[in-house]
Length: 265
Image (cartoon, rainbow, N blue to C red; front, side, top):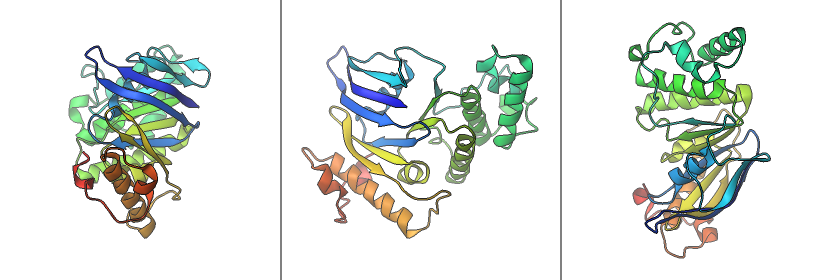
């Protein structure tokens, strides 16, 4: 279980990035975080990863306080960040070199198969497409079997077709281990397609505006009426999150208002 308790961050210049976040994410749950510019999404992810220190509050994975990078928390960034001098197999196994060789090779082989690159172990990063490279980055993070995996807009640089394919690949990898996933995204459809819950953030300072459950069965039909209804619900919440002193209950109501939805990003 991932627990954020009164998590706040104020930078030395006085900018209050996070104004106190309370959030609990169950083991194996997928949570998407979405919101306008300046709402603290990336700051929150850095604090959960232990890459930065909060001004107040805490991050815990089960009973473990996260105040520095820890094997319990993996991170996938926007760019694959593969090491060009290592083969694909060695890139995936880079973080588990402490394991016995046989177990390491077994995990890497299994990961390559799950991402559809079973024959690419001896290839080099330069030989991969952008989508293939990001598959390797996700496999590298999951092969260490973290309890929590953070994804910072991992598909934002990819074309729409590749993005859809990678969303399905991510769910396939997740299903094998069921780690807790926290995904930061600007893509409403992606959030609805992947998440069990969508956290809509409000800026200045960053805080939770609305927590939206997504109770659609998997695999999700992106063309279904239920899927479109969830997308509209998130867009209304985003619209409301940009209004000063807005009421989350009103944003969640089915009033058909999306005046600012096109500006949230």
